[in-house]
Length: 265
Image (cartoon, rainbow, N blue to C red):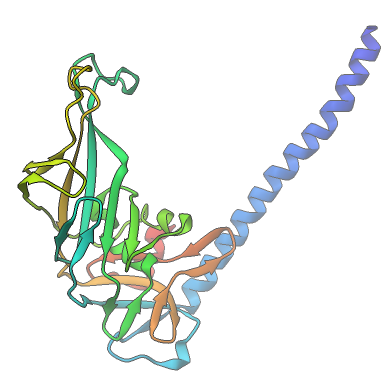
């Protein structure tokens, strides 16, 4: 192919590619600017409310709420194992025994977390004062306690992917207490022992591939929590925003409006 033809062909492809790349960068820049403006507007419009009194005048607005959590006591049951336990919430975490060189480890076997065995059962209803929290807000206040993004259940309902993302945000710290496992087989057929339930040991793999699960009780945080969320009648829920699925956040302790937005940025 002549040099001039090759040059013309490259130019014909390069110009649209550069233009397309420029549009992506411009769209990203414009999107960030729109989101920044939205945050500025919310900083000016947010209102601090008394959680003990619901004011209909604030319906639909972003509100700043400081108070203590409460919930209706209930028993959480994992049908997989048959475990039933009380407490604010129950976390199930799982591990698998083996050699994991891909993780940067040595050839010495060890227990590695298994995400598919992880689940959290949360109360069907959690409140701050007279407000009932949306399930996403519930996941926020226990997010730091788990340190993971588990498959979550509230009142038997699985969270959506957008709600799972909310668990990555910081929340009020709760205490985790290991629930002892009774000796004998659970509903899953796994054996209980001490702090863990163990799967049968594979006989042809030196024990590699054996799995175990542990249950931890999450106690209700007793400290004051701070929430930024939208008031929807007697509920607190995430607020729609331009460049993200929703907006809501929580902190352990009392945090002022200006400090909260400074932390978000």
